[in-house]
Image 1: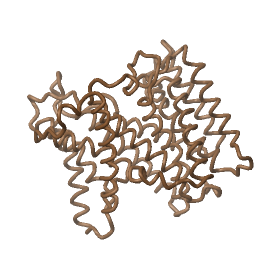
Image 2: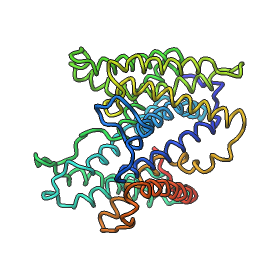
Image 3: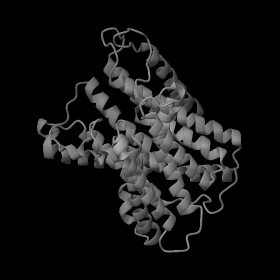
Image 4: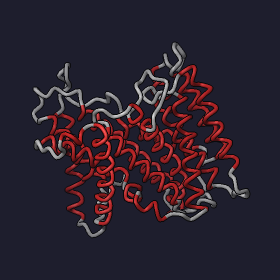
Length: 397
C-alpha cells in the first residue's frame, strides 16, 4: 500500500468533533435506557417496528466514524515506516480486543447461574468492565516497565480466570459464550472486515465503493428467506457482520471523497451524490426489509449512512471551511478517549451495585427529571474524561 499524498498525517477536527458528539449522545442514551416513562422517540425502536429514532442512529454513527478514520490511521502508520506485518498485527490485535471486551460485557449482563458461581455475578461484572482498562491503558513513558507489566499481564490473567469462573445458566457449563457480540464486538468485526478489504485494494476509492455495494447485497440476501446466503452458515455469519461493515465502508468512501482528492468547487458534488444514493437505496429496500436497528436491515444502515454524511458535511463546512471550532472543545475529551468513556459508566454501575450504593433519589429515575439527569451525567463524564486525559489515563487498542 502506498502513502496517500493528499491525506498525509493531518488531523481533521470535524471528524474528531463528530466522534465526540456521538460518544456524548451514546453515554446519554445508555443512561437514559434505565430511566422510566420516557417518550418512545428517546428509546430504541422494537425489532419488528419499521422505524428508527435518533437513539438508533448512535451506533451507526460510531461505525461511520470508524470508517472515516481508517484512511488516516493507515496513512499515519505508513508515514512512520511501519511494515505490513506490523500494521496487520496492530489491526488484528485491535479487532480481537474489541471482540473480547464486547463478549465479556454481554456475559456480565445475563446468562449466568449465580447459584453455581464462586464469585458473585455483580463482582464478576465489575471485574469484566474494569480489567480491560488495566490491560489496554496507554501507560505514560515515566511508568516503570515492571509496574506496567504487572497491571497488563495481571489483568490478562484475571480475564482468563473470569472465563473459568463463569457458569452458564441452564446448562451449567463453564465459560462465557458469544450470546451476541456486544456493541464493541460488532464494531470489532465491522472494523476487521473493512480494514482487510481496504488493505487488499490499497484504499482504492472505486474498490471501496464496490465493497459497500457488496455489503448491501449480502446483508439483503442474509435477510431473504431461504436465500443461499441465509442457508449457508459461514456465509450468513459473514453477511451478518457485513451489515455493519456497510456503515464503516460508507465512512471510508466519504472520507476519501473529502480528503483524498482536490475539491475545486464549493460544493462536493460526489458526496452530495452519495447522500442521494444512501437515501435512495434505503427507501427502495424499506418495503422488503423495513427499517430496523435490531435486525440490522440494509434500509437502516443506508438511511443512517445518509444522515451521518449530512451531519459530517455540516461539521466540515462549519469547522474546516468557516473555522468555527471553539464550541467543539466541550466534546473533545470524549473524542480523545472514546473507549474509556464508553466503559467507565459500566464500571460505575457495577461498583454501585456490588457495594449497594444508591446515589440517585427516586424522582431522578423517571420522566423529565430522569432525562435531565442523563444529560447531567453525560456532561459529568466529559469532565471526568478531561481529568483522566490530563493524567494520561487513556485506553488505546
